Length: 364
Image 1 (cartoon, rainbow, N blue to C red):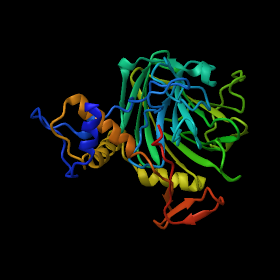
Image 2 (image 1 turned 90 degrees about the horizontal axis):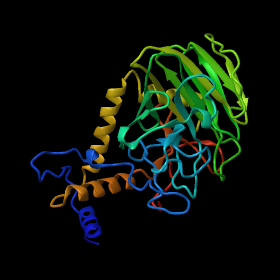
Image 3 (image 1 turned 180 degrees about the vertical axis):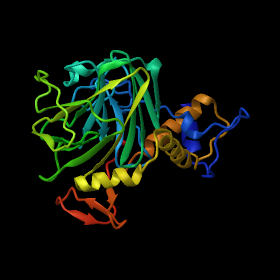
Image 4 (image 1 turned 90 degrees about the vertical axis):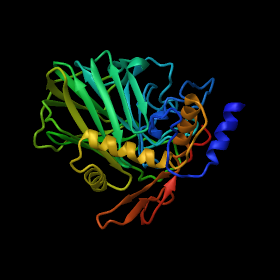
């Protein structure tokens, strides 16, 4: 009871942009946050029903490591031991489930398109989970994966071992999707995966641009039963797969410690708008620049409430809860070519001018 009384009183403190410094050393508010709080849950027993969202405050897109199978509302559970993808998510709650989701998963080896075959063991000891940054070591593939966000885009970095069979699987999920090889470094497509209540033309269009050319590409509409054929290179682009469950795997030959970066953005409006979101929100900024900017944004929002007089554990609890409360409602608008806010309407399927916010995750 004492802890909860502290949290309530601290939340009523005047916003003044400082951080607690009882120990004499200033700590940035974002450093107190653990996004893993509330993730030790499952369908039978909830301790929060949360997932470790890598996002900006009120951002349109969140990213999360995915331990659960495709379509499971408990996308990440602390007791799980394997990760099967890094998913763009818009899920407010496991009971409401997700919409507009797709994932990337780095792998080493052949024939790893399906979520069961591509999954990798991981340990929480090798995991860093902050609002602005997530990293984990994927032991089965000997790969380190890292993510950092903007509002509608993200940079995902993979550190590979020496291998002629390194790759990244792009899974557009089932119930209607498309993946296209645009050129030797770019993949685009859409996912229609949702949990109901959307217009018939609902799409989440995505574009993924790598900083290393593909050595080869595989495409399939049936990853679970897919038997790998010949690896093909499509340097001119134009090769696509569209159907119930579109998946691509891009291949690289890597030396030990080589980093391959994927710059990802999406749009509920169009493929062109997804590319615009990628170029305007990321530009030419590298991973570390995007990460630093994301942390600054979280420090700005979390630092508007000053907390003093508590213990370190109480600060961690407070700022982890404050982080969770500033994820929603999410921005559901985008900025068009004229610099104007526009949004896809979930009520009539039209693209309309102006702002829109949606979702609330305060149940969980």
